[in-house]
Length: 339
Image (cartoon, rainbow, N blue to C red):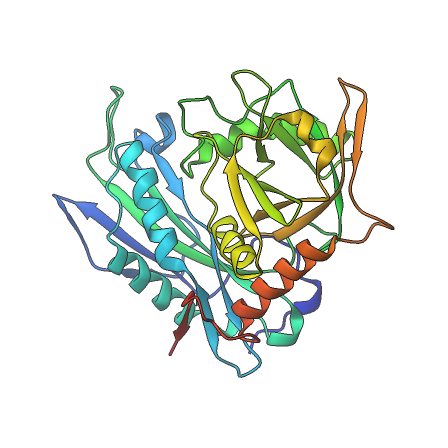
């Protein structure tokens, strides 16, 4: 048994029993390899280091009240990694290999899946990198797929509490026809200046506007943006926004609750008309937003009363979490179990 203070876990890295690796060489994927090393041997000319041939995913495993370990929609993560890999000319693991690796790594590290009452989960990080050497700008001829896991608490230290964010007008995370729609590390590196500036000003994260015209809502830090208005769930439509599996799930839940769902361009001026707003993603699930500050335009958009999450955001959050932990029936067939 591991000795961990489950209820006070940060969202960070912790060494577990092992990780899993698999190489694509000579036109085919090899066998899954189990390793207890936290390091990889990488050629100094690997394309991941020089040309950004890298993609990753994030999903979670949850322990229910019944003690069973549940996975959430990991087939969607496999598909998204395939989309990312295709765009930057990598070979992605097929869906069956991806899922087999996730099931194996969770099973081998099952003692690190937090107990039900802790509210924590096991974060699963699949990673695909160009490991073959190239000096010219071209795709690698060898790829490494690996997965590590780590138990985590809430992404934002506030947990499911409203946060304050600031509009970033002087930085972008992705170009209009760039890599914003896939999950690659370069997007997150590009977001670091905006995030650092926001933290320095006392905000939890930034709200990006479209990088071409600065007229429309884009991503919300490392997460998707959503808003509630007139019984509608509204989220941005843009080529530079990552298709969030959490957001996809929340849209289904909203429809199931009798709401209409709108994916469309959202003008920044519309921020003043919303009843609730939030950020959503695997790490945080939902982070309700208390207020959005537009420093350059000298505007503040306030959403929460007495710093409490809005009722629809709370219902969406509670419902999704209840499905993930097995407290509600999985009528959407999102859950699979670790034997």
